[in-house]
Length: 178
Image 1 (cartoon, rainbow, N blue to C red):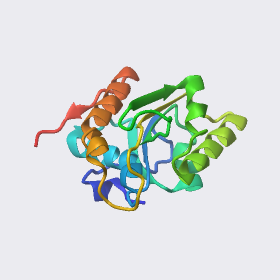
Image 2: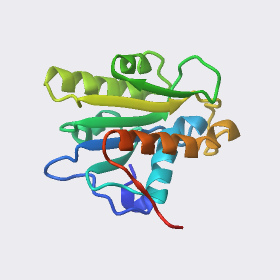
Image 3: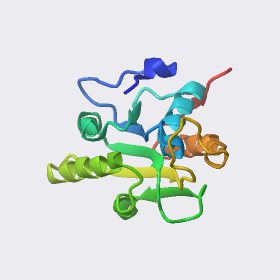
């Protein structure tokens, strides 16, 4: 797993008290469009000043190892490829009761691990008050580092959805000058 410092930002993932919000990018960058969540959080920290109360994490395919990163959060925003059996490139946002459906049609094993983490946190009374999943229906899931043009061309749109979600939660971001 890469840290924010490798993504060009100086963000700390681990603190004694977790920050209220975690933006979690999931995916395997070795499987074309499956890496969309990682690419979105990379672009987010590259182009935006992240509020002090927000952590951004490239969760890659870490699976159950993400437990400690999620516990104690008020809000969890997950960015990932979502197999919703719809047209490739379809943007998808799931909230509340819709979130469990995200785990029914898994693109990869890390999604099952996240499902297990959220179930365990719920049993312990530690589940984030709000979980939002922002994603896109993948087109190509073959081996390769390059995303399909259809999906890769929507990274900025997904980043904007994350920015809008942070604003809705009361944590506006600021665009960095480049």
